[in-house]
Image (tube, rainbow, N blue to C red; front, side, top):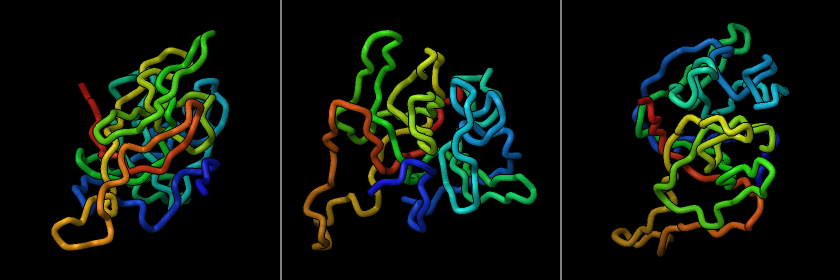
Length: 197
C-alpha cells in the first residue's frame, strides 16, 4: 500500500544508475517541503519536512521563478547542516508518487488522467489539494493557476521492461496504468528532464 503522507522511502528509489550530477543546496532553496512560509503548499501551509532517506523530486530556487526553476531529486540530506545533495542530471530515473490530476477546476471539477503512459510529462506541484509528500502531478498548473515547473516524464522502471531476449519473468511492460476518474497517487518511475528555458 502506498504511503502518501511522506516522500517515497525505500532502498530501491533509484530506477537508473545515472547520470549523476550532484550539487549541494540549503534546504531553504528546495520546495515544496518544510515549514517555511511560501516554500511549501500553495496556501502557505506546512507539508512534509525533508529527512535523510527521503528522495523527493523538488524545485530549486524561489517560487517567483516558476515555471523555469531548476528541478532535481534529493540524494542525501544532512539535518544538522540543513543541506541536501540533489541530483540535477537530465536522464536520471527515480521513483516517486505522481498525482493523476490534469487540471484544477477553479470552480469547476478537477480533471484526472485515467491512463498513465510512458513519456507523459509530470510537474512539480505545490497544490494544497495534494497529500503531504506528493510533489509531482500531471498538471502543468497548480490549484492557484500558477504554472508548475516541468520535472520530467513517466518512464520505465528496471523491472517494467519485457525480458523477451533473456527469457525473464516479464512478458510485457506494465504500461499504460489504468486509474480511476478521481485523485490517485501512483508510485512510478520518472525520468528527470527539467524544462529550464
